[in-house]
Length: 234
Image (tube, rainbow, N blue to C red; front, top):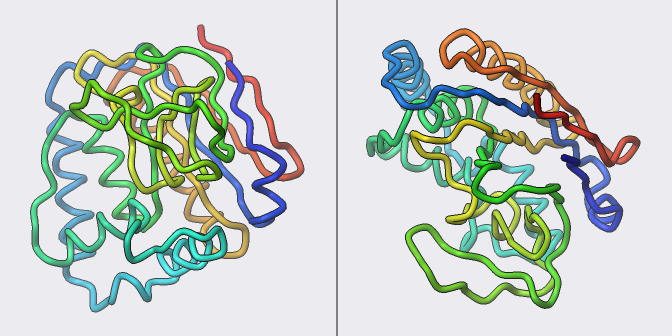
């Protein structure tokens, strides 16, 4: 499979970079106490910090990027802003499965958005691009597609949208459950702001996946100088 970022998006956000991991043979069918503990530690650390989540530099850069793209960050907050708000309000994060717990733990630890897409649900190349007429999106738990604004930044496979408004909302056709074995983990970042955190999270994610979930992993990094990468599944 290929992962690519549209050139038009780099013209709007030249500092954009996306690193991440492609994992196969993931065993997400069981509880992993070490991951549960890691999540609790990350949540406790952020909850104890004296930070206004909107003013955190890793969140503020997303608010700026959304505003530059014509997306109201108050109405459509980035996933890390929404996650951070929940933690700081003392609201528990729902336990879904080990992979989701791991993604939440790393997102909270590094204060960066991180995705997890089941590639077996919707196989094919993945693109980060502006939405087009004919694109469709299924919200979680829904069987009926919802309207997509043309020109949204989306993760998509063909005409099937995996995430709306970039890192705001993930859909039914990408969600990871206990049966997921082949998973694409993008970590969106911006040079000069969150690229170092994304690289650290990428390495830590790969280690956790290999050591605790039995996965085979391939790391990748995409930016305007290398806008496309081929990821090979075993």
